[in-house]
Structure formats: C-alpha cells, structure tokens
Image (cartoon, rainbow, N blue to C red; front, top):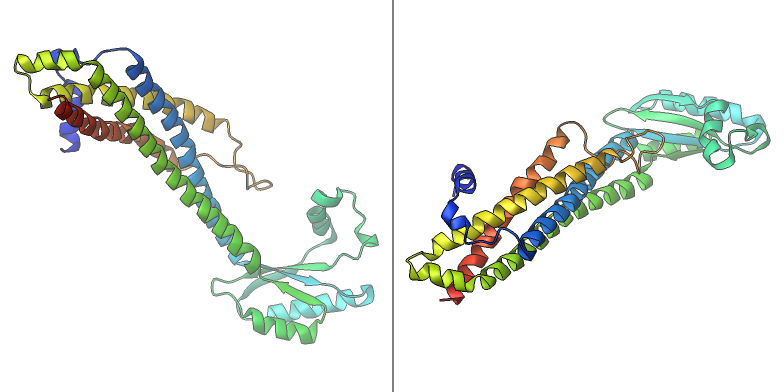
Length: 300
C-alpha cells in the first residue's frame, strides 16, 4: 500500500463499517493514552539522541585541535622555560598558534574550584600554554622530545585521554536514544494489539451478525484498523504537543555548562518530532491489521 492510498483509506473510511467499532470504552481510552504517553517519551528520546550526537561532534572537533602545555618549574626558571617552550612551538610543524595564559585567565580557570579570589602568587601554579593545531596536527612524540631538551618542566597534554572517552560516551548515549525509540515503537504496537484484540473479542456477536449478512472479514478488519489508527494518530498528536512544550522548558545551550544544557532540538531538527505521529499511525495500522485478521480467523 502506498502512502497516498493509506492516507485516502484513513481519511475517507466507511460510515457503516465504522459503527462496528465502539466509539468509546476502555479500548479507546487505552489506545489514546498509550499513543500519547509513548509519543511524549519518543520526543525526549529523539531529543536526547540528537543532542548527544551534536555533543559528540562538538567535543571531537574542539578537543581534537587543541592541546595544553603545562610548565612546572621553580619561580626563577618559570619565565625562561616558558619562553623556550614558546620558541619550540613556533617552529613545530602542525602548530597553528601558541600563547601563554595570563594570570587572570589562569585565575578564571581555577575559580570554579577555589573561588574568584584565589591568590595565584602564593600558590605553586604551573604556567599554562594554549596550543592550537592545524588540521593535519603535529607529532606529539617528537614535540615531547624537543621540549624535554629545551624546557624540562614542560608537560604536553594533547587531550587524547579526555577526548576519546567523552566522544565514546556521547556516541553510546546517542545509540541508547535510538534504541529507546525502537523499544517505544514496539511497546506501542504491543499495547495497541492488546486493545484491538479486546475490542474484537468484545464485539464477537456483532461480527457474527455481520458475517451472516454477507460482510467479508477484510471489510470488518478495515473498520477496526481505521478506527484504531486514527485513535493512535490523535493520541500521538496530543503527546507530541506536550513533549514539544516540555522540551521548550529545558535549559538552552550554554558555553559555561554545555553538558546538561542544549538537550532540545536545534534548527531543522524541530521537523523530526513531526514525523512521530505518522510513524505511530503506521505502526498502529500494521499491528491492528495483523491482530484483526488473526482474531477474525479464530472466530470463524
């Protein structure tokens, strides 16, 4: 069945066939509730998956082209070793730029742990040098050998040990979000199948009468399929609305606290949640059609 024929069948319907399915009752409430709740959860799972994908990409790009040089030396040698390290970095292939952080910048880095008034002059704080790599990068092993000669107190941190676990964790969270969406779809299909089975069993006598007057099983099944598909779509639209509103209340992306912020959708990603109700309706259509034909066959 094409998308056009599916939509035409769902929208046109058959008034006499629709009366076969009870318009209310616990099956109708169960279908609407299940579709709404599952869509609400699917919105958050989708938002988590897309946000962690962005996070993994940002961490990979930011940390892959940045390194830090830490110089620990006696106070009377710190300045000389810093200058020597900068000269080495200036002549290193693959280093785009290098600069020593000022005392104010280093104080800002320590402020979250020690407060804004930490006295750097009274602490053995190493000198930090920010290194920005080119796209090709540099030879970290060779640079360490040169620094060992020119600036013995220099320690190079190319962020590899930080970047890989962070990117791997974000990638796994993205995969978990996609898996959650699949599980939500499966749970939705299961609950709608149960509701359809209950509705068909409750209307067994009506189905027998319809058969006596010449109604085919596909005619009866189409009525159930259409009603449950539309119920699922309606519940999914309501769940989508609540989910989107909840996403809007999440904290926006911030550079100062990027891990737990910006978990919503960005740009064209806001179009992705709009696909959830049609997908939920398609899942309901397939699940209800299968259940209806199976139950009708058992009632023969």
